[in-house]
Figure 1 (tube, one colour):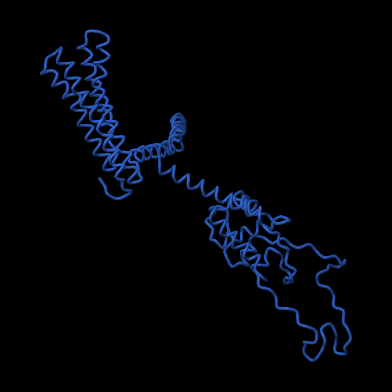
Figure 2: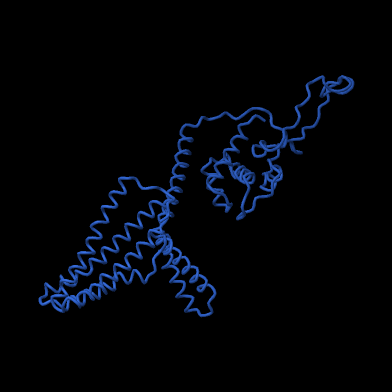
Length: 356
């Protein structure tokens, strides 16, 4: 038995040790009862042979099963089958020694005490191993068999030349899919961790939206040609020089004779109307940020996820919230876990709140 893992406390050792006492006692009592029943009809010699072939062989299989369980290994199917087949044979033989229907029932049930004893001891030992080592060898063996069979049937359903065989394998794969993860304690614990993370994320977002303080948009000038999408990733243009700081003492907006000159407005079209702002594409945002263009279905870096979130957030007016942006991220087909999306969103918010 391996010594690594979670140790048993003294109280647990005492209780579990005491639990094995009635288990072993039941098996011994079953053997004694079988000997008494058979010897009354066939003699003591035959009774000893019957007990040895029934309860004795079952006890050997029980010890083998117990040893494999304590070593963290799965038991072969023949051992589990023998734990039931041998006592069943002893039950049938004992039933022939009965004279009344009541005796027949009692004689038939007596050898099954060894089966209950062996199965109970093996089950309790397996629970101890799972508690200490955190793994269930029996469940892992069953899960491996199910996954292997599922992979075989899926391959045969896709590539077998016979359509009837493909149909049978397709149905078999669906039946096997229901067994994936059954009685897998490790998988159950991991799924619970995932659900706890999602619940924590949802609660965090809900509380953040409830207690969020509305921030007034900054009135600081933004460099020409930049919008809210590109403001945090493009450098700001140098400030406009103050009047009188030009060369030759010429005031800005005036010519050499100190005469004011009206320059044409570059932001207006020929009819004097401000043209609409051209939407910024994902390729442009990626180029501004200095990262490759994020592609759907491919692994993304943290910087690429920030670019995608920025693009999706400002794809609508007003900008999308975290929930809306994260939903759009998944619906668009981009790859990224919940934790990475949250981290990228925090970076995006920090960039938006930083002074430009």
